[in-house]
Image (cartoon, rainbow, N blue to C red; front, top):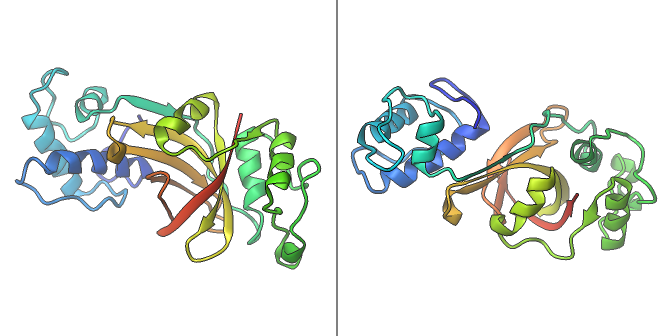
Length: 233
């Protein structure tokens, strides 16, 4: 896991905060943390409290406010899949599929992949990828990837695909519109609530972001996102 400490503004802090909140549910000495990806004083205090009170099989923890390997194991981290990818923003409102395809396959291109087609209604807005299943299959094939028959129901089912490399998720925003993002990592401490998917998102436009979210009920850019197709290696 990436090194985190007081002052870190990092998406992985959100997973740390989630695990600490699980601990704080049984220790009422501190209030629950906002899972905001900011390693502030409250997160530092919660981590130090956990390190001081932990008595499990990992052994004695140093109360230093730094989540090192022993602290992560004590917090329950059991699975860590990480494919580090750069943060890249889409250059128009409709080219998320270009960024997603390039990041997941390692081949950045502005051309339409293979025989996949533009959605005619989107061409004035920059050229969205046609959302039909047949078109997504052509898109996947052009990237040397494949479209799954069904969307995995949980992160345990998604895990084998992520072990092989980054994946593409195509889904609907709850407030309308379609979007493609890349799953680049998975972190699990066993229970579904303590599992998170790392996502490389090409939004905000021109900037991009890296976020950690629950799955399959995803929260990206503060908005609900529902994947309806998954493309894997």
